[in-house]
Length: 315
Image (cartoon, rainbow, N blue to C red; front, side, top):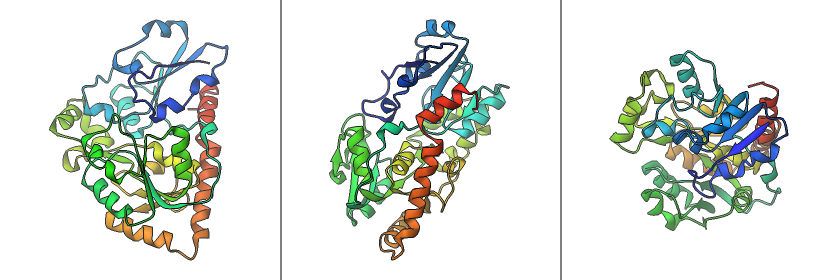
């Protein structure tokens, strides 16, 4: 399998830079796998496709691309598109009368699994701050022995304005994984807010937009689902995922609640669940959830599994 990477559009130190899929390349070139948003946003490298009989694109950004100008036909030159948004997969297959869109998990390269270490901190969050509920979440976390990991580049204004909460800035990927592994609990939101009316209008400009389940609460609640890498990062760090329950619960496409993670319903519930978990006399029950999530991820959702399934045509 030939593998092509072009990450000019991706922010430095973000997760796609650590898939390292090119190391799985083989001499056989019947199938080619492409990753990096450049292949979509400007139709880059069209000369490559003619060299291979089957061309696959890995898309780990949906449905965020629809908040900007986006032509849904931009992926048509590929034979298969592997997408982390199952709702967008169903929608595009339906309106294009095709089956080339395939649901896929957020891959993780097993070489970045951190060593198991003693838990030094109670709870962590790593990622951007995207509105009031995130600000309130930081206020809740600050009452605990917490870590908040962020970057100082390529971040929105709200995140920039709340860097005073950050305990760790601009960590390397390895350092970030180690820090997560030092925490008992990781807070995860698998959704994101629409920023403004322009974003919403871009969503509505898509053909039959209302048939995409991912857009079902775009107009009413200003929110879209998105599978976040922080979930699988916490799994491989042997840290308990405390996940916000939302209108989609997209994580249940790959993991089971109370088997691999724990839900919270709102920030009031987040505070209660944190106190309940961290003060529990039965940490062993949560350790079982952590261990199951780690094994389930290792057995199913690594980059190695992705490459194997592509080679065996199992997706």
